[in-house]
Length: 253
Image (cartoon, rainbow, N blue to C red; front, side):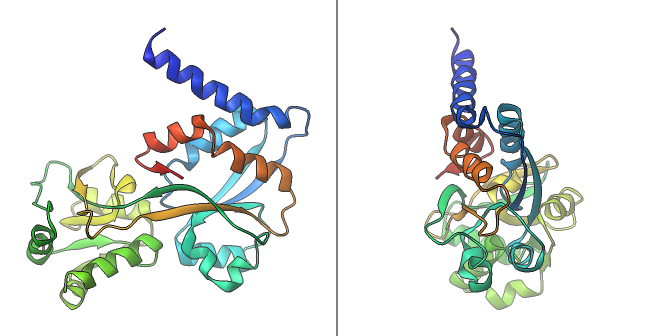
């Protein structure tokens, strides 16, 4: 059996194991809040739906949007969102008390429009020089990753210099679209988001300056489908789900 076949078999086994406890239960519709940078979520949801018969309705957004959805956006069953959401007391109160479960993490990267020259970002010094020379930079300030980008600018001593040339976008899709259209020379955001058609990823931010955004899961305190929500979180920790997370440029756990 080829390696590809073995991998496929392992993924199917993981799905089957995740689905087994639910085989006899009625199909549920799960309301899920998801971080916009969790690029693996669509594939993960499809796999879970196929294995269990459940369906997921996904509402994605940036950290401020997710806090608003959790607190005023109506009922939901679970969330897979940046840790920063749980640092908001009002949002945290909407979840079952106790520890959350980390599902995936990913750091910052830098991209250019497809075919454009790739600048040097190999060291903190090289990155600082590249940012200083760049006429325009795109990111999503109103997000957990965007907050990391702003901290990066501060650590490099460029906070004030970057304000005038930073193009603030509303979400991952907007960022990719703007970069592909050449509306900014550099894009700085989660590296998995930047791995998209129309963009060339230059590389990750140097390790000394990088910090992961961690996506963590929890069940809503008022979940109508609590057992199915728990099953989805359990599925996200299976080898099959972890393989999908890795394939999308993220690190499981």
